[in-house]
Image (cartoon, rainbow, N blue to C red):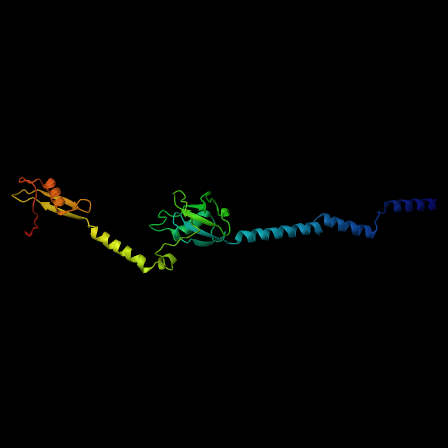
Length: 248
């Protein structure tokens, strides 16, 4: 009787004992579980993160790198251009760049309304954002007027500019005819004068103002004819003129 009870108790004790797995299996299971939870990154995941960081740094470097471009004034073929280093750090937007170009290129003669438009060098495209600017390219600054087609890249210097070969290579013999021609033109030129002519006689006296220039005063006789038509003397044509002091 006692022997059978002891056998039954041992049977129940064996049945209630928990089943333990081997230590090696539990270690591999916990390691795989930690990897599944992301605690230990896999080699593929590490490579992806490294590639993402590299790509981000490259994009930031390219964005902050300044692009050197040259700007010309619209229609000004003698202007050699102004070089700017354009970057996102210096200019946050295209409007900021236009304001800076206005301060540098605009005055009462050139671009008096400021720089409001940028064209490509051939005038085929308007610049709408800083991303349109290309390293080493040239652009034309304008206000509200249309693009003026000029060979901006040639930068022809006028003959009067310092160091110009064309101006310095002229011989003395070629300058002498030019000087004589200018002297002849200066003699033929009559400086315009506005004179007042008063009709003689009793008051009220009629007064007229006549403009004398090269077109209206070829000779003194023609001047007298013009005064006759304007003053209308009772005696007829005007023959003599006097100053207010009585000098003929």
